[in-house]
Amino acid sequence: MKPVVIDASVAIKWVVEEAGTADALTILKSAALKAPDLILAECANILWKKFERKELLKDEALMAARLIQQVDMEIYTARSLLEAATELAIELNHPAYDCIYLALALQNGWPFITADSRLLSRLVQVDATRFKDVVLSLADAAAII
Image (cartoon, rainbow, N blue to C red):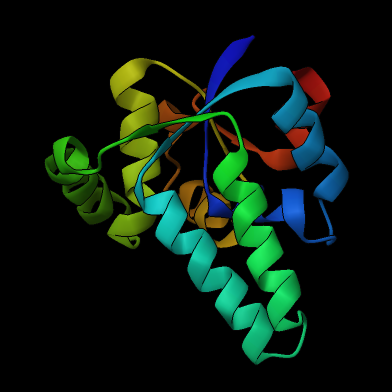
């Protein structure tokens, strides 16, 4: 299986039915998943927000968290990615927490798959051609994996 970095925008779709869920499940079944430890906090936060917006019941949010915990995904510490992520955040003028995923991908030569339209748009806006073969939208990745 091909190693790929995924972010919380992909992982949450494994446990919450929404646009892109089918593509996210394809990635889950077909790739060797890698992510910084930040993904766990981000998934918990997304589940909390979905509970607050009444999109999920408490039991559903807790079950979703348990399911994400059980996914076979290699987790990397964000500590070693801090400087690279900060540099990327400055270069892209984009939040550093998203750049931690990108830094992990770049550091290891792995593709980074995201469903984060804001990040994908930002990369287009800054004409970041050096990321063209690194960052893939969820839909594009599901079509080629």
